[in-house]
Length: 447
Image 1 (cartoon, rainbow, N blue to C red):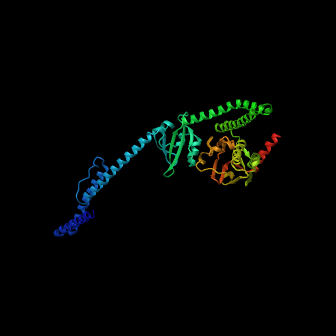
Image 2: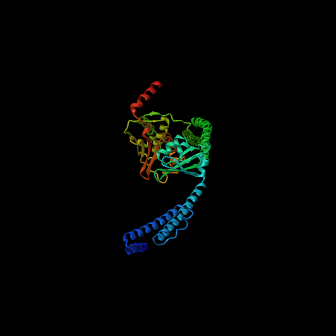
Image 3: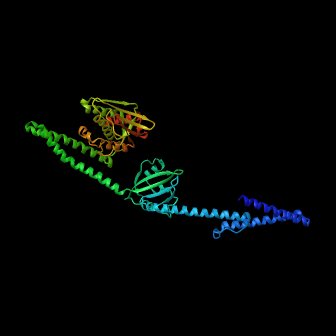
C-alpha cells in the first residue's frame, strides 16, 4: 500500500509539473498549474461519486468499480473488506438461527428481557406456557403479562438463588417453575419449566400421607388403649406375656409419635395449620423448652444453658415456633452423650433474629448436611434404636422456618459437635415494649 501511495504521489506531482511546464511554455504557468489541479480535482470527485454509488447500490455491491492507481487499489481493498463482512454476517446469522432453532425445540420456555423487564425475545414454548404473542407483546414489560405480585417482587429483588413457582397466566392448570439469570447490564434470561406433573405428584404424596396418618390414628388409639389395659393388669398374665406386652406398648407409642409428626408436617405443608402470627416472647418460650429438655435428659445430666442477648420478640405462630425449637433442642439432648453441654442462644443483629442450638455430640459428616431436612433422612441410621426419633423433626423445622420467612443453617464436623441456627428476617422482629401490651391483654382476656 505504501508503494502505491508513493507511485500515486509521483504521478500526481509529475502531472502537475507537466501542467505548469505547459503553461510556462504558453506564457501562463499559473493557469497551467490551476488547470492541472482542476483536472485532478474533477477526477477525484468522479471517483468519489463512483464510490458513493457503489456503497449505496446493493445490486452492484458484489463487484468493485474498475479504476487505476490509488483509487483502483482503494476499491479493491474496500471490496475485500465488504466480502469479509458479508461472510461474517452470514456465519453469525447462521449461528443465531441455529441457536433459535435449538431453543425453540426446548420444552422449557426461554425469555430474554432488558434491565427494566421489556420483552426482547422468547421461544415457542414460552408462547405455549405463558401465552405470549409475537405480534403484540414485543417490547412489553413482562410483569404486565405475568400479573402475579410474587413474580414482580422476585423479578425486582435480583436474588435468584431459589426458583419461583407459580401458575401459568395463560393456562392456570399448568404449574411453572421460574428461574432467572442476570447477564449484561442487568438483562434477564428467564427459564420457565412446566412442573405440573411433579406438582401433582407432590400434592398426591401430601394427601396420601395426610389421609393415611389420620386413618391410622384411630386403630392405633384402640390398640394402645387395649395394650395399656393389659399392662395395668400384667400381674394377672403369665410372665412370658409381660415382656411382649411392654414391647408392643413401647412400639405403639413410637408409632403414635410418628403419626403425630406426620400429621403436623402435613398441616404445615398444606397450609391447613395456618400460621396465627402474633408477637411471641422468644426468651420465655425457649426457657420453657429448655426446662422440658432438662426433664427429658433425666439421668444423662446434660448441661443445658440458655442465653438471650436481646429482648426483642418475634412475630410468628407460637405453636409452630415451639415445635421447631423443641425439635432442635430435644435432638441435641438425644444425640449428645451423657454429661455433655447444650448451648442455646437468642441474638439479634442488623440481619434479623437468630436462635442457635449447639451441642457437644458426635457431629455430622459434611456429605449428610444438605439432606438432613428431608423426611426420614438419617445421617446415622444405627442411632434410630437408641434415640427413638421419627426422622421428621428437621423437616418440620424447615417448613416452620419457611412459613416465617426464615431459613435453617447447619454447622457440624465429626467429633466437634453440631450447631443448628434458625435465621429470621429483621421484618419479623418486634420490640418488647410494643409486644408486651398485646400479650398482657390476651392474659387478661384468658383470666
